[in-house]
Length: 420
Ligand SMILES: Nc1ncnc2c1ncn2[C@@H]1O[C@H](COP(=O)(O)OP(=O)(O)O)[C@@H](O)[C@H]1O
Ligand SMILES: [Mg+2]
Image (cartoon, rainbow, N blue to C red; front, side):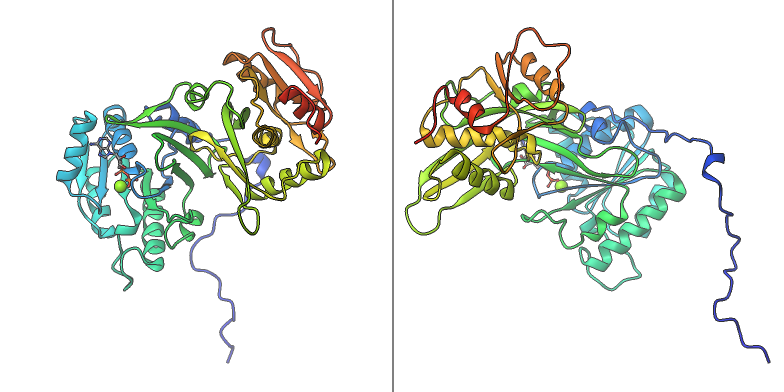
């Protein structure tokens, strides 16, 4: 008697492999979110059948942004179903009233059972489904409470397969903890097609919508909003907004053109040095990478002779932006030196450059666009690395000062010698 084969063939008909060269290019058809900053972060619109996660701390504005977007989408593209396990339809109505949203075509549903809510969505055939939040819904196949790892994963997978089979895009919101992880499940990030984060500082009205994963487009794009009475309002000129609170001749303040996604942005970096009162000197990095700060501090000590070993150092990026580009190195170094020396930096100066361990200035990508943005905002001079080639065409109204070493650049930035 023949034994049953160990690896039986799957019963379903399989799709034969296709040669890449024979495949036709099918562009993803996207539909536009009628909010430019939001649309840009998504890579130009919402891809049908995609599952999109918006993460953020409680109270940051996820529900507000989605309510605003869904009202506009309902008007432009047809029905939107907004499922909330967090607020009652009445609470949402109150918010809508404050935001000036009428809500034609926007259907509210207070339901936490995934299969039941998908049943309603099936009937309504909306252009978009919103689940606020993934931590409040659950499926019947699992005993875990809503918000538990298995429930979040199960629910997300159910929503994903529904999105793919129906072609209806689905947004889910997810709370993140102070440490930045989406509560419990990082797994969620692996399941969904697109991950967006809504970020902001506690006492700042600016909100940044950042894309960290996108199966249909580039990541790193950010959208800039301001939280107002009428909801999240797009910031049309983020550079201007980020610099709006800058003081004249402030010590320890430097402006740096960074590239976020596809556009240059000017940000203000502030540093404060202060004699350590006891024990180890402290380093605090808000908005810049902590290890990068340690490297820059080490280079300033060794190559420029600054005695930072008994100084606490705090570095801040205003507006709540997080910068991880090494192109901001020179700005951070100049801000620290400016504070340490108690000498202010010329208000018309912008600064860009990566720092190497031997104290050399290294080339940065897209230098011309950074210079262009600084010139556009009225900066008169910009410190740049010498390396990195010619800029053409040379912008007329900004003077480009190029340096090979950190020391020369910092001396120029502070208008004098810096050695002790
Ligand atoms: N009456 C109001 N006027 C202005 N802003 C408000 C008002 N009520 C709430 N907000 C703002 O909306 C935020 C709540 O946003 P919400 O969209 O509920 O956040 P999330 O869904 O991310 O938890 C609050 O933190 C507050 O800043
Ligand atoms: Mg909410």
